[in-house]
Length: 81
Image 1 (cartoon, rainbow, N blue to C red):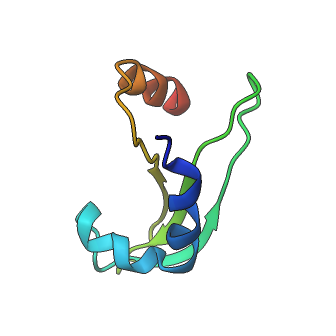
Image 2: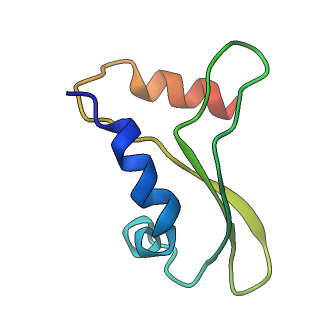
């Protein structure tokens, strides 16, 4: 069962609850977005826009996988590049 779409809703509504799981519990969620990638027709599941205690703003990718996907790591690396 593909679970990525149903998990986007609680991620959008309660994104701050995920921060301790990512090891960034001191960060502040500024926005939650779905980003379209310019190089091909694809989108990232959820991107949290965060600010840490020092004021540094950064993006944190949340990609929900409810099924085995051996290419996930390579796909995520392609997103970053």
